Image 1 (cartoon, rainbow, N blue to C red):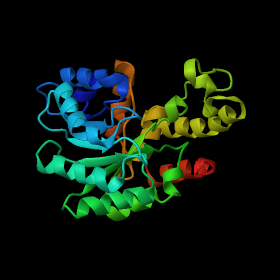
Image 2: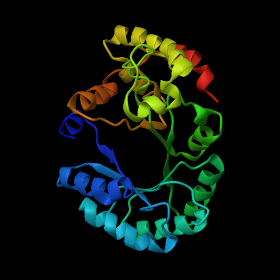
Image 3: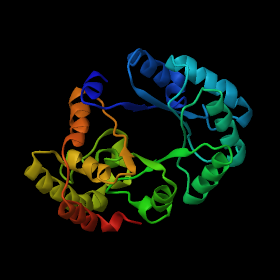
Length: 267
């Protein structure tokens, strides 16, 4: 946290669902008294009912040690929680001064448009949609989400921007991933082999800027003005490496080369 903040990172994303509130509590402790934007999410569990929204918001505020949440997001679409009702609850929270901006997560283009329209009735913008997006997962470019974000002025917050580590260059067909990663598609057999040309181009581009493959992969996202990647970090070194993606730019030729080599993941 200290390394990230010192490097200019000013948004921390968490959720009540992470470790049953423990993540919110710890983040709140670490950033107490600091000028940091905090983003968290509702609901607390997949089995929650919409009626608990007011209490869940108060509980998150208490754990974070804040009077208001900078970005309060709906974690995922849920048929038992109609979007119009959710957005009106969010609007109530904004008007009460408990939420500064409203976001959603894992929403389709259609769901996002509905959320945007409902909030607009109350004069409140939809700030963001947090979805998976990386060089190895370019679905937002073809499913309408990125286009809708651009049209409506919504920020696309990209989670798994390094494809859970597949874009870092740490793994290959010879250097296998451990833990849960070894069961994931991008880290197995032919899929892992297919990723290697992408990593090699990331290395080649990175060498010209004295940057790592992961920094180049993050920068590819940052170059899109409506995209905000949120990489995770397990230690100081990773935190510093992630933050360094803020300090250089890619050329149009670099961006196009990465676009072309990852065309197979644009599905």
